[in-house]
Length: 124
Image (tube, helix red, strand yellow):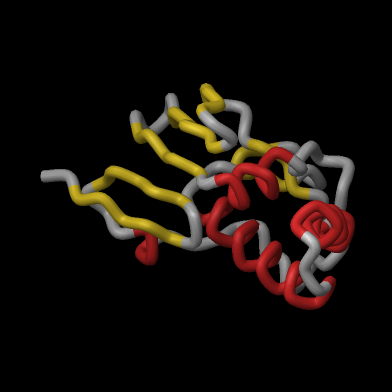
């Protein structure tokens, strides 16, 4: 039986609650971490949002515009501060609020398996 859960702009259809999984990115311990999108995903953009299909888990995620913006910045070259600065400039928000929101979103994206750590280059 599937249930739909929403976490900060990420909707997931799954039998396992998102909160039951762990984040491996450890952003608090590695402020210079340069997150990258996981390799095993198929992405379709729809009206500024994204539908992401996880081939490995056969799960579909929907990212709202803000979550998609943050996730799209995860190319393995930018650290958390760089991503949050872009978010602040694009959405005209305070840089500290953008940093907190970006950190939370990256942890959520990692927790559901949509990121890899660019330092190791391995999924989750």
